[in-house]
Length: 83
Picture 1 (cartoon, helix red, strand yellow):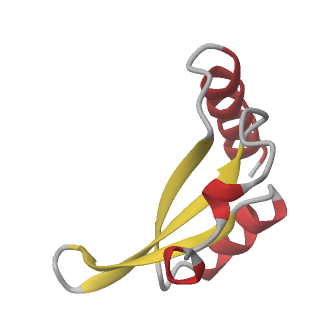
Picture 2 (cartoon, helix red, strand yellow; picture 1 turned 135 degrees about the vertical axis):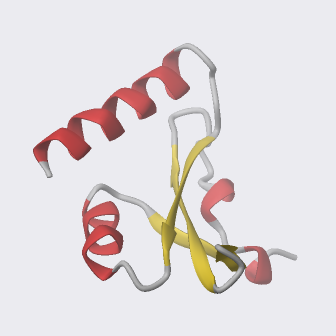
């Protein structure tokens, strides 16, 4: 898990400082509870469910974390809640 944390932090740093992105997306199988919990501990939220994302059979979860450019944290509001 330590390697995953380092890689995730590197992705966030590059996305934030070089790409000036609003958020980072990570996709995970909906059944992969340990990974979902790990991402949640790193500050990610479930943004949306992607139907039949894995081999056309299993749903995926799009997990998202806002970066410094998204001051109002609008990028992590799930689509169904946006007006």
